[in-house]
Length: 467
Image (cartoon, rainbow, N blue to C red):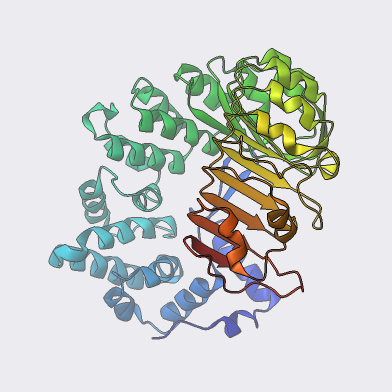
């Protein structure tokens, strides 16, 4: 039996699509609303759906059982369990479990598959409930990262087989057990996770924090997060509900915000942060709100927005990493006031004219990331001998060819150079001026005559080209 090719997917009728949603969109475990605003869709492609439908229609269950140990057929078999009639489901699951008993090499893979089939079964076949429960018991505790999705398919009944404390499990097994419960979701799972608060192993605390995404933001914050030692742990905020609740988490220090935000005003209600990373700033942000976070060590703001009030940065004496690749009022002349900076990323209109030579007065800088306008060179960035700590440099949208020829002195410890969308010399030997280079990345670069760089060999340095 061969899997259908993508061409067949292209001839789906609207009736077939509606039937797919009817059969699987509201079927057990296929579409799940585990928290407000979140929907999980279990299956990967229509291809598996079509292959499963064909297997059931042509009664090729035996062929699927023979392939059950192969990852390529996993999703198709899980879907077939939902398509099949009662005798076929019994044949499929019996066959998989019989193979698990007879083939130690594939036993775990096969039992995980049998467990995962429960997500699409309309009902468990008579006589198989005990066998399935035994198979699941032999899979516990979860150990591998691939275990939780299969085990979670068993549903809430799995929870009663889990330990009341994670202390008896290795850290690795405890982490995957937390992930399993999170994927099951629901009120019972929330109670189980709340009972596990108190295990202070780093990986376990991190897994409990990450499980927030699978539950109601308010409930999980009150029942679990408020009881965890959050200091020093990265807490990701992926939607507005979490953003609203985060201000109540008094131990919060490290925040990574991936949902879109218009400004940073909400930070006024947050506890003092040490790490703040915002990946989608879409409006104008006034950084003056950061005055309530004087212990900030890392600040990264990205997106299509802009920043104002950057003078407040000089009031952050512990700031070590600053990424502001946005338009705004950050003047390079003010950067030397940030004496502890080791990493700097910046761009914007002012950088096309302002003298970046001020960076040479920042001896602790080790990593610098600069973005230009696609034509010029970093202004004033030619006398670099005093940048003794600089080990890696990113240049984006610059004329690197002209910059290299204009260098009057080079950073003595520079070992990595990353060039993105830039003009580079036609002759790789031009990079010999940077004598300490060990690694160079050229990402979608071209030579002065416009020829795309597809291969490049810089003497003495490992060179990678991405086109």
